[in-house]
Image (cartoon, rainbow, N blue to C red; front, top):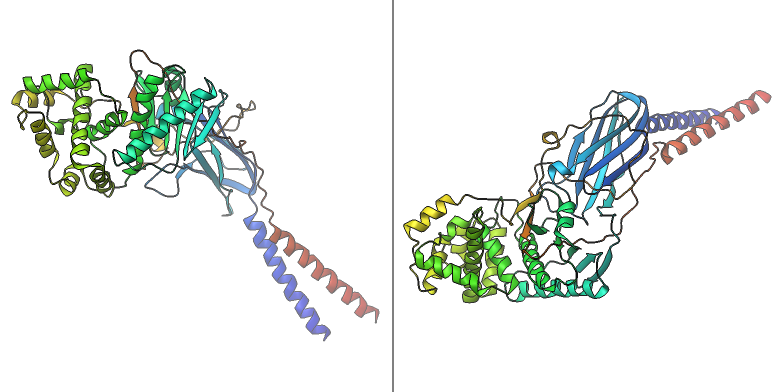
Length: 488
């Protein structure tokens, strides 16, 4: 009987020892610090401190955002450093070079570490929300719409919220563009503030839409209600249309359709603009609608004409065939059909056919003149206030070289954390709206900011402790039985 007890105790001790050995191998890498720090809107720094019983040879940053993307798993950024048993590393993303994330974007990250013994450690996934912490934001929300502003009274914030609600209602009921479940609107008081927050946008920018994130940043100050009635519907149209037509097939709306919908959403067209289009029709100077698919002219007068022409083409589609067919057109493009194919499927004519029908309703020839064709050929695609990349997604290696330099003694301000996906995923598209001559402003949204993570992650797991305790107990019992036997 005693031999059986000894054998069992030996087996238990051996198994426990194996468990301890396994636990030690898995937990030999210990993370002492793990943080992400942002200096909005310029840089984001990811930091890690770790040690192991063997040299740590590989450290990779995994990260991403909550934006729509055609790739899963986020981005991987290996760091370059000298292998050591203790490492202190950081990696900085220069948003000034790539384009900033708008406030309100949620960012996640993890670290993957491997040492010379083949032990691999993956830290827990952490998340944080990008915020402009330099301002004291106020918030109002209703029916899925959130407005953030920092200059103006509660009445001003409510006016912005009401304007957004009116715009979304018109988009859905009149234009056939279904509203999203949630929308964020950040309101800065000046255009300079918008440009400082968004980065890398033209100097005329007064508002930017980020369909991949459901966020719009605009510039409106208290007392600029007329401007708000234009820019909020315009940018929300870009936002919602972009969200509703997102796809991974490389299909984008032509500029004339995207801008035409945004102008139509404003529900307020200047008669002088219509007169300019009629004059161009009369003189044979109006370019074919098809020429407005990839951008507008760099010249202000020509671009203005293109906006109004696009508006009238969209007006013709909606008011002749109804909002239901516009919904179907957008759904068809979202499914992967390009504009001519989608128009033929939904309406029975392509872009040229639409152009001809619209021109006939105005009383002019269906076919553009040779002079108009010539003018269209001279109008090169430009960075117009549509579909400008505000946060381009590019491989990290193409923009900045990651370094595994030791952490500096001085610490950066512990502000909100932000990050940008840097792989070749579908471009984070944004749309920018030009300011009227009399206006300057922008919008921002406030989101509660989680505290930047600085977490020590130990590798000694409960399994390791239990196994060690069981092994020790087994050895003690064996020793006691051995002593008792000798005593007898």
